[in-house]
Image 1 (tube, chains in turn purple, yellow):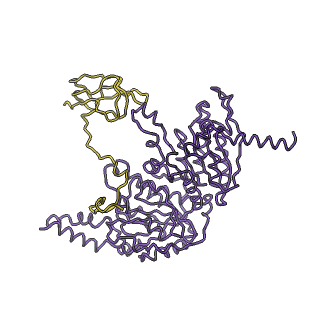
Image 2: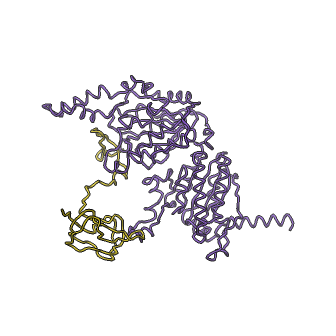
Image 3: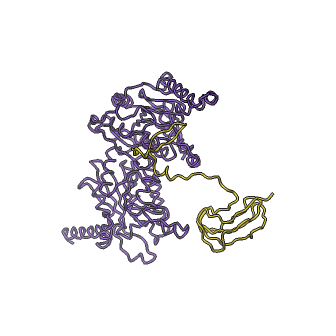
Length: 514
Length: 108
């Protein structure tokens, strides 16, 4: 064969593989508002940066007539590329090829690119669109999943791992996304569950649609399995690219710095917060009045909205924000918000991202459902994560900092590096109303006008404790600051903490209350 | 922010805060005092056998129903010494979770 002919032959072979499951299958994929596996990768990475590997890998199934079947690339695309110049490893399951089902060689391609990502210390992006295990390959396909989960765990905290759910992801397959750092879902396209509607109906008699059982909205809002929700694949890819700009390549470096920017001036910080501690406001307005360019990239926006987490930049450097949200459930801590914040704190700590905590919360959510759902062990996760974190940790107390919640929200006692408070801060065991009811129970009960006495005692308690100065007098707060100074002081604190180094006792690993 | 007419509040330590509820909070289960005289299905399934008759007095731990669920035959037992007051299921019946299968009353 002449060189020219062999090149033409190579091109033909590659074109055949690129066709995936063929025109008909692609048509079906497109009809559902979905892109094909390769189109998706090309939409995420920089133009011209993608290189695909293992195109000619073939499946090894022989049983149930699988021996005669040719499956292009065994239903998965793997490769490397860049996003805004940052290197990444990526794989995408191809639903047009045998439903994207996972057999031995399919899994081996995925684990190959996972090994590569860990070795090169670069982020890994996995696009899931698969009917699940390739049943014809039996235990080999289970082995494949296990090998993937093991690598997810091994890479955890070393390289960022991102899962994108763009189709079904059911049964055992769901555990790879669950083990990764960030999960992206798209409305009407993503479907995640352990057992599908058909099985649930036949076994349990419960009738539910796929979307209602494990659709994108369910995971973004109710289960907390997903971190980013989008209305289209295009929007989802933009979110992925933005996230990549905020996080470092691996756990030994810092996230890329951007040119510093001032916040947009129209957000006047002192106009946002009502003086009455019982009135709500949107804490995200405070975050945006502090960050560079007033930009805030929120994570898990819909789940446990009573706490807000996400990334912003301060003087060009990535910072993680954890903030109580008075707008939702008065910003209380509960099982879900504790889980949400704790995992994010650990993420920031693993990847060298300083944490700024904005505090305004009345305590833990009261209720039998919370107690029985284990708010003790869930709430403990926040304490654990803050205590364990060795990245710079800075707290600003805006209004309410009561009881256990005060301790949990990165207090001095958990080794916060800097604790600042606005003059509106109230640091106390509980709010004046509750405290007066307990401390002055007898006086109130015996008074001629109990309600008037109650109000008087509430005011007494308020005057004495509902301020930052008692805590400041003990040194638990480093400085009481004026609201408009917040950004300036945070920038200074971050600058001072730049080379923070705190030794921790040697251990294999701690035992966080899962 | 909540509408003026439709304000939502949450009470923590006697203080009433204006805020908004989320879906999960609105859908939370309100706790009810359990009634131990009602033998409910703790899992959905099929009644394979009813081993008792109304009026019968049985000691604690006696088998009363075989409930098939998740491919298992589950032995449903008397939680304490008691009398069978009412049987609400029959052989072959499919029941959801929380269905009152048998009503009993304690016997000294």
